[in-house]
Image (cartoon, rainbow, N blue to C red; front, side, top):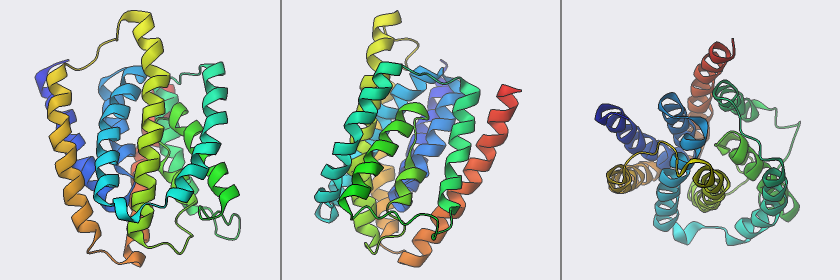
Length: 249
């Protein structure tokens, strides 16, 4: 992998960390698309998990006083059966299917409110959320739009939403690293991974992007926050659907 490609990926890590810091999602969706354009699916999943775990953990730290731990632990209960089921199936999508899944995920944000009334503040809903998010994150590598379904209709302030989603996605990305990383190491000694200096550079860049995005978040209204999130993620999804169809065609 050339230095120029690695530099592009690092720039994407900075920008998408900033986007996620603002909206609590979308950044991971964009970054996965960038990685999948230059790497194999399995390698992209692991690199995505490593970089996004840095971004999400730092964002959770910055907003640690706003984390709803009751919601997080309930989602953890739901994550366990999804992890066990997919570990048994050992499913790995093709690159075309990956892009198509990434592109279709934003449709969830447009589901009419009267169809579903998910609320992460309700224990059973949070458990179901953990199951869905873990499953999608291990299949498509990203689960932000699904996670948002359980938060966008709550009466929680935007800081609580972003903070709780950040610690949730950190845990989910750690599961993804283990799920894809261990078989990859067993198969070919680690695949075509970026060098260690790439991850050393990604650490401060993602932290900088997260810090910047979190400060921008504080200046947004709750109404504007939800509106911009939906349109941004939908635009990215449309691009990925076209890309996925082209790869499968």
